[in-house]
Image (cartoon, rainbow, N blue to C red; front, side):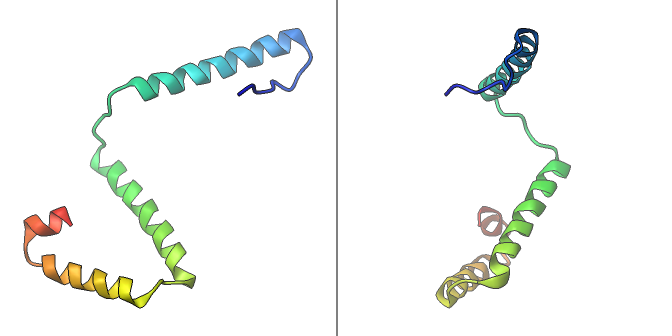
Length: 88
């Protein structure tokens, strides 16, 4: 899909094109690269963001009670067993 460089000046358009082209090349390189393991600090940061989004979503409307009953049942089922808890 074409993207406007928002200029009619040739020199400015060339400069903006070079910037956009470099960004696109970095994006493609990142998509081609193999996944790298994340450090624990980054994992915890991402988990925190997910938790914040989830709690913000559930703050006003926590959802149907059968969902939470099922969640409680599954949680109770795996508690005490480290291997099952980890997979859960």
